[in-house]
Amino acid sequence: MKELSQIRTEIDQIDSELTELFKRRMDCSKAVAEYKKANGIPILNAAREEEVLDSVEQKGGEYGKYARELFAKIMELSRALQEEMI
Image (cartoon, rainbow, N blue to C red; front, side, top):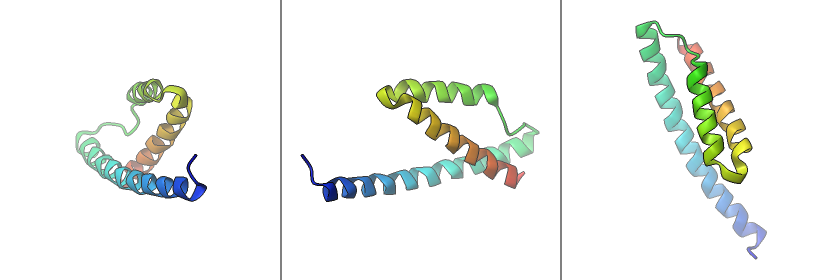
């Protein structure tokens, strides 16, 4: 069994990686907002979000429902950023 300090070190590393991925995703959200603004497309695409959430839940295996909640929040934050931009 790993020591708690080892597990926490691993979590810290994963959190750093997740933060960088989150920043990349939000950069993409900015690009999406620019495209939507230029083309008069609404911010919310409920069908697309549901498709993504279903996929994430399936890929999440035993953690599927938690993955779905996480991605629902990420998409909420992406929409908030887009609304600020538009």
